[in-house]
Length: 534
Image: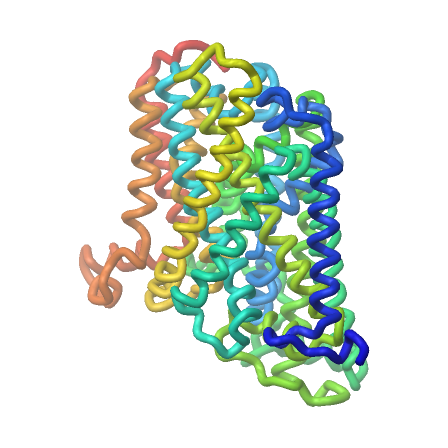
């Protein structure tokens, strides 16, 4: 019997497993080959000796920033809504310009191994350690959430698309992904991560394009009829809307959130987060680093567009199956998080399902692996090396690898907490999509880090104490504005002070991020007397 007809216990055909095996073999072989030059110092292991080409860094930036939230969350966004998520790139472009012309030149001028070492030049080691600790905690939350997102489809693959996403079921998948991520990251440091990100990006985009082509190939009506249906959309709301000019601050992807909220989020993601900023430090100079971040964000636009098209294709496939040459094998799940996975597992031909799952793992592992590497880099440069100076270079490389194992394990633990966390969010928020959940978790650290770096780079104000207080305030304020932290009766209030607080909790997370960051900036920049200009 041919491979295309052999079904395994998981529901995958043998040919799908062969495709997955080929994908993992490609990743392992490329990682080993790229790491054939021994890492003799932390500069080799964490910065690639600053010799990597800007185009490869740009692709790695895209691959890392997208994650499994893109593969599953972006199609979910257009499946349940429209194309307005694409407008958030307006803010990301503005953020890229700020980072390219303000942040990166300063990082290179001070030759930092961790971007938080910049704060030591301005305010002393206490500020640097506090910012690094904020990053470690924030990245633990954000990347733990991403690890949770990649565990969802693995759970459905292992247990079937009808299984409930319980803590027990998802926990098994989290353990598997965590182990694979740790082993992969240990192979060759940042050089291996960046080059294999290039491979994984190609797999990721190829999978998205393949899904759109498959749906189009099964249409039995002219494309103009499909277009007209998308224009009408659901209940008269067009599925093809790119810009939402509405003023409701509760909505996720309005023009206001794109130009303001996502600009702040972008500065946080690309300029104050060691995970992504570390990549820009692997280029040969500041100009190449700046070019890499601008190119990466621009490359992200068509990439996101591909997965928004996937969501529209799925909407046509399941909500207007009369357009198809045959009916779907399985109806769409009531849980929108599962829609794309149901399509992959039930509608794809032999081999194509394996390619899709490979794309999913490419999206998830590229972000999780880089987080482990970045967290270890920040810990070694900001905490371990100052505490144990004058050790041989190889000692710090070995310590960095131990750090990868430690932080990878912590990411797995937090991913388990996310199972409970998102369930609480789904009970209290109208918008509980995977995409909003993954992005919202990132706000914890950025609410303090963004104002701290802006204070350090743009002003002569601030002290160690004000920087530490600003970081604590950003984290605490973001936590206090989490809807899941309060019982139902708080959300049900509509008048008086309690009503105002209920309205605050219902704001889209980007506005809550801006509020927390604004207060933290005032705290950071209140006193004058920084040690020196950056």
